[in-house]
Length: 433
Image (cartoon, rainbow, N blue to C red):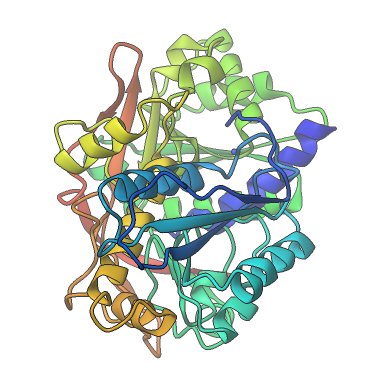
């Protein structure tokens, strides 16, 4: 039962993550966790700069499904403080576990925003961001959060790690609809020659809705689409794997949870289904692949991940090397950790620009909203260029880039081309959050 509930929650998260660009193991945390680094250097007389991180660390999804951004951000701030902080002032990180519930999220917002008086929220990852409107009304900048729900495309002063073109006037997107591109499908068609794609889902509303969205995007790019739906409670993955083999699928996309994905891959290996790519998203782009897919070596080595940030394995890149060096003591690594690191860097750049006039909520917010130096933000090349605009109408097409990596047992995640070159002019499709 726990796994089936987890499937429902992950399908919901997947639906909201798919076109914005997408569940891990540590001990549960207390409801409110405060861990300032008392050993960090600070300027004489300089008050610490307080930031907050809200995470669904003990959500029904289980484990540390949403803790990656938090861990990456904390690693960045720890290193920053060791080097003297921001203008001699250390950054004091206050974390809060909302338990994956709306009630818990509102409690976290109240504690951090109203009681702790944080300058900003950073690298958030909440299953139910119920307190988003409260953060917006308080004009607290929320920087680099994961868009698991529509909040970052709804309210001002909230800035997801992937940017937004929506008006953000209190309603999601444009008239309640969000838009996203087909760049992932275009990539596999143009760069890898794929023509037939299978989409696997549960017969459960959120999963089925996610699958329909994937199918629409694939069809818009001219794919022949094979749909496979399995029972939510008693999924027959072997039958689905056998059919997608029979249909000659080049690609496999899914609207199922991590556990289901592992079972699907095992079934694919058992029936001899070989595909060009089993495509997953940034949430599953992590170092736990060998463990998660231990029973399916063939399928495991056909795993591809797509996202909007530089592969955490690309240690030839200076900014990635610094991230990996600072996080070398973590048991696992993930793309969400890297994006949390980038979010902390973003806040630091914003606060640094305000150091002479005063590091306030308003000044930090203005830096992020206006693009800092007047150009898209990249976190020293860790992110695809992030922009925030308030377009009155959604774009019909947009030039969009994608970061792509493939899992290989001998190498781990191997980048496929440069993310700043994997770019396509693609249609923008509407969907309801």
